[in-house]
Image 1 (cartoon, rainbow, N blue to C red):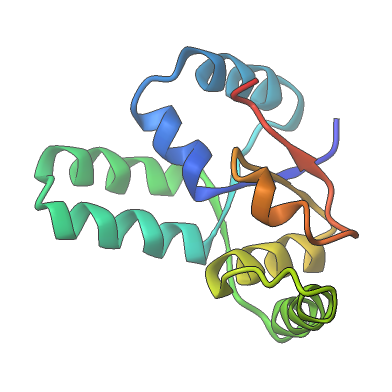
Image 2: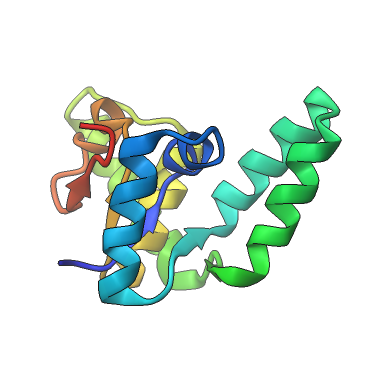
Amino acid sequence: MKQLLIDTDILSRFFRGDTQVVKAMGRYLSIHQTLHISIISQYEILSGLYHKDAQQQLNRFLAFLPTVTILPLTDLAIEKSAQCYAQTRKLGTPVDDMDLLIAGIALANNMGVCTHNTAHFSKISSLYLEDWTI
């Protein structure tokens, strides 16, 4: 099983108790022992929780963060993101910046992305995808 960067939508489903995602995450952890999320997903979740003023969910997410590896936005990740941007724009299928940054972080770390948002991420040809919701 390939190492995966867990996308924001899968994290959200996990925190909402999505049974399929929770089970898949358990199987993944039995092999890899740790989850990887991007600093972009950390930002997306935190900004959403602060916006909703969801203090209980925020506390739960903040307690979760020390248990995962948060991958930063490095120079290599920026380069990979820019390459993905160019590829998708040339094909006439642009992808939003946050997803490009997440893809770049995954590619820079030789990882796939676990996401339900396959419509966007599948436009990046070099990116391995898994969807734990199906």
